[in-house]
Length: 397
Ligand SMILES: Cc1ncc(COP(=O)(O)O)c(C=O)c1O
Image 1 (cartoon, rainbow, N blue to C red):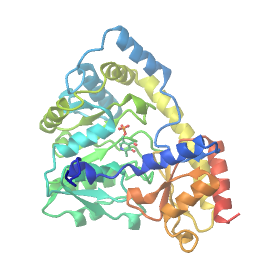
Image 2 (image 1 turned 45 degrees about the vertical axis):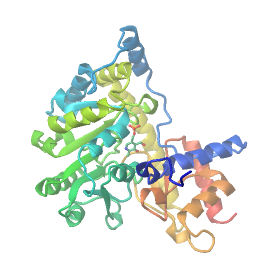
Image 3 (image 1 turned 30 degrees about the horizontal axis):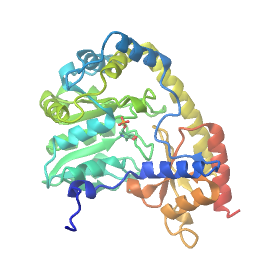
Image 4 (image 1 turned 90 degrees about the vertical axis):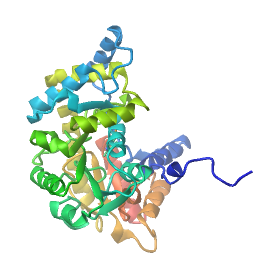
């Protein structure tokens, strides 16, 4: 007998997902019969639009049930490049697109094919929980960029100040999970320019690309001149945009050489996302009018919720929150409440769960102790009762 763990060091050093843990806490409480308000949800509360389901059925009927190329169906890659050309004036070719099983696999493929052990990867804080885990898994080093000073909106100066000789990659996510903040398009371009000047690659997670509330602007990195793709890789996803989280489909857009390496990697793991799901997505993108209408309907509902929630939160004495310009999260600063009653935001979140049955995600997992993430991918009624409960909880009543 040996004391050695049977499991690899790589996986042992990985942390479980804090967002999934919080969601599990909600489920456990619900199973005990409590009426729980769950603000941890990282997915739309809408169903996939019917016409996309119909396209998947059409794909099945047509026999799109076999292996596809590891990079995805030709029609899928063409639909992505046509869609970006029409919507964002992008000029990449289908051979610069690869299908992946969700944005998550797209991100994994991109990081795993570009970093080596010892390389530094820049990650702005707060970050989506998965970024540092992928980087760690690949043996590279996470180097965090603090952004509180600029109200959680990354700037080119912050990036420039963080680059060293070892920096290989910057991972950026705008609209951001967990803050909902959006980096303006002109700043994004400056950030990317700084990276390219220093020979640093940029992985831009555009999973919430279309979820931007005017007057903030949508910025798609693929709209930059074609040569930018030499350094930039876009990770895209259908999950949030079309309420398709369970379908597991995303994609990357980058130069042919990087794409080829990612396809090689993916060909030895998932191979490709489900064939008729690719078919359905391609058809949905081809039918732009319908798919954009579906997105707009969801977006206007999220906006209504945001426009109710943020002012209501701002009314709470001592609680701070910035206006999220995208995604469906509010990131609240509860530091002024910490002290005797709750030592940390995790403690605050835990007691809010056990005493008031409102489930939130603590900021620690996002690298931002003292904050909580509230998802507003839930009804206004739920949000109203969550805020009432939060107020009573803070007042100790
Ligand atoms: C910032 C961010 N990126 C990527 C993803 C991955 O989504 P999926 O793998 O479902 O496409 C998520 C999901 O929560 C996310 O919040």
